[in-house]
Length: 371
Ligand SMILES: C[S@@+](CC[C@H](N)C(=O)[O-])C[C@H]1O[C@@H](n2cnc3c(N)ncnc32)[C@H](O)[C@@H]1O
Image (tube, rainbow, N blue to C red):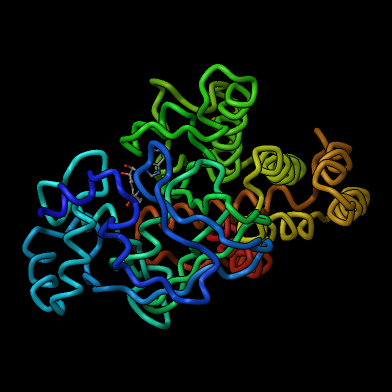
């Protein structure tokens, strides 16, 4: 019987996925997930932060996603043991329709991994096929995450407590916290039915507003959109042209930068997306902005803000800075502009004679990378 016939059979007992080995200590089982094919379900409570699964790839293709061709997947497939070949073939039928090409099956079931054990910021990711992690279904408010790790082994972690019987989900998009329902569905090519996607509900409407706002705040902080580009005038995410220009000139004052950073955290928290990985990624730049204030009263409020108990309290305290200029504003703006111009021209520019600015530059680079 063909894999497709087997997969479309109703019986979960003799489903081919049963032959995918799940480690005996794994806190989940594979079983049908209504409207989503199969998925991974917790068989006991998984605490926030706990590792769910560590997995080696079935095979790796050492190329960036857009360069992977049918023959690359075919060559890798030929080198597999017969049982592994069979497992990969099952994955050809796990989308909404059978994949016509092996490269499609690979794209659907692969994860980006780093090319080396000592990754550089400029490294482009390569891709590995993971039999079990690719059984995890998507949610726009997931309960787990697979962070990019050094080397080829990937691991998933619970981003909140997961109850026994609950489906384990990950988010398939890199920047979905900045994308509306419509945008996300266009990229996913299936209709997700998580809480953030149930069209017309108050949560979904708020969710779209929050994610749009987060994208706008990112633009204000970084001066570029999600793709690293400046937005044209057709449908800018920041519609106020003066504010958009200030963002692109990096002349957003420190007080506003701190408020934008904390507002982003609060919105992510409201959205159910502020997990420990997100905090680790975003918090350093908030702390850094707070440390840059040079006007004494501003510095005092900023350090008070970041020591408040909750994100909302931190935000409320930072609002006291609203509209206040700081002695450091000009130097920070000039430093960020210099970094932008350097990365744009990609040529080595003469070093600034302003040593204060030079010192700040290394920290600014960090902020640009972290943000
Ligand atoms: C990598 S596979 C995930 C495992 C898959 N459900 C299976 O049975 O093997 C991705 C596919 O699962 C389905 N899927 C994943 N998340 C979904 C969701 N939230 N809603 C509907 N379908 C989903 C889609 O068909 C998607 O193309």
